[in-house]
Image (cartoon, rainbow, N blue to C red; front, side, top):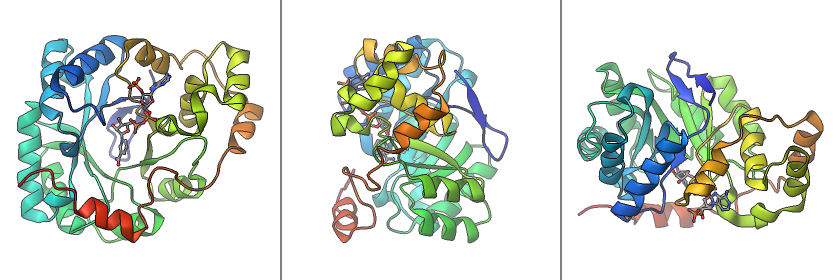
Length: 283
Ligand SMILES: NC(=O)c1ccc[n+]([C@@H]2O[C@H](COP(=O)([O-])OP(=O)(O)OC[C@H]3O[C@@H](n4cnc5c(N)ncnc54)[C@H](OP(=O)(O)O)[C@@H]3O)[C@@H](O)[C@H]2O)c1
């Protein structure tokens, strides 16, 4: 496992484990225990995943010292705004059973995220959060937030995989000193990624699978990846990417797979804004 250093000096693993769409407590706890046992140290959850308690139980049971783990959770749209964000942070940290969070992210670029950001800056200054960031902020909103806050985001978690490469967005993040983190690094299985001929062909040269090639490609662009799986053999496969390097030619071949847009979600559309604003995680 390799680490990158965020702008404030905090070390973040370049690969982590995501738990989106694992709401069942026992399945989630088992998956996180298996992931930690397989070598993952970054766990990516969210209030909206309904599994912070299960993640917290696994962290305790794992026996791995807290200081070796990097725990991320996220603030949902419904809890946006200065006061609400502070309350929601306390709920998340209580569910996780932790006294600090390594990375706290605004989950979606909607509602009063400036108010949320001020709350997160305060919690960061108090030492309750080691790094603060956002998700799904496109270049315009990210630049605006960075320019109009006391502390600019340290991380932006967005969809990035070989079919949606986000090259210009990543360049913009680099210019702002913001670390890119890829959600859906295996395109949530879309585009036939696990049997894709180009990724399969490249993988054969190194004895690696298409999933491993896709993850390695992001790492070599300096992007943090957080693959999800509830199957231990896949978790192990997805973390076995530290013993090979893709050549410049491989990287160039993969760059041709970009279709330039997401086939999962478009955060610039009115439909997405309506749909996500209507998604309530509590009364
Ligand atoms: N901030 C955001 O808005 C946002 C949005 C989406 C996701 N995320 C985060 O990013 C994480 C990863 O993204 P994701 O879960 O959406 O998608 P993903 O990691 O790209 O893909 C997960 C899917 O691939 C399957 N899979 C995993 N490894 C495999 C392998 N080696 N071979 C074959 N199939 C494999 C999994 O199935 P099994 O589980 O059945 O193995 C699951 O169906 C999430 O868990 C979450 O933490 C954040």
